[in-house]
Length: 349
Image (tube, rainbow, N blue to C red; front, side, top):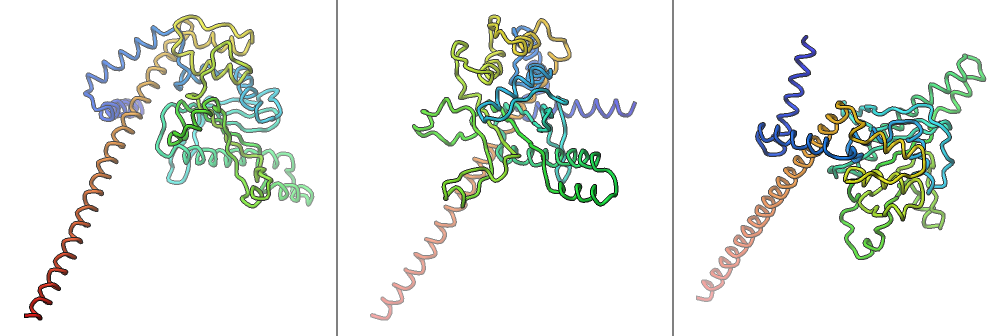
């Protein structure tokens, strides 16, 4: 009974926080939720740029395997034949018990650990968030890797101890795939950036400065990869799609706004995924989860907007204080000069 009451209080608090973040009353918030619910129910497909739709789109091993092979293909990585498991959600905890929730986690048949994230809101410190979450994920993958090593070499024999010691600092391949519905580098507004609008697929690695200077820009460690997809730069029409990565990104970007039936891809994984996100095939629980996802995104955007305004005001305050200090310093300097001038004039007299 108490757990139920605690859950109710937590939900009410969350709703209140939405209202505060959006700067509206509770009644206005309820009306907004009803409006979003109507928009979701009247759409043709779930919008996979939001959490519920995203997990529904990639909700089977076949679809996720097809998506991963499409995204990894440009990097010349061996294709994924099968997935040992796939989780739609996983929580990671950092020091101070900060929670980092992963959207989709999977492990391939060759032992590669994969985290797939759909990010709708350009959070403050987004690059740091990506690095932090992947670091925590590597630790989780390492723990599972060590357990597998121990299971393979379980005894206290000299040989098994030596083998466990050999793999002490080894880590499994761990990939982070982030699909962002915004630009990771919004400050890049140069003309050159416009020419690179089709460069929607990027990757991050750790490099050695010395090796780069010597003309060998190979990553220090190939086992950790960050793959960034800028969905805003992906503007291909259906006729222009060239590969599986293009097809999945086309679905992610266009399904939510589609007014008519999406065209057939002629691929079982893709066509089955389209069928899963049809609104008339979606259960009420998933549709309501989509409503909550959209409300959450609006709440995050509201908080970011408030923080931006507060930051601008704080910046103005600091600028005013700095200007006042400079004026005061100039006044003191002027008073000192006037005093010196008066002193010289008095000496001449």
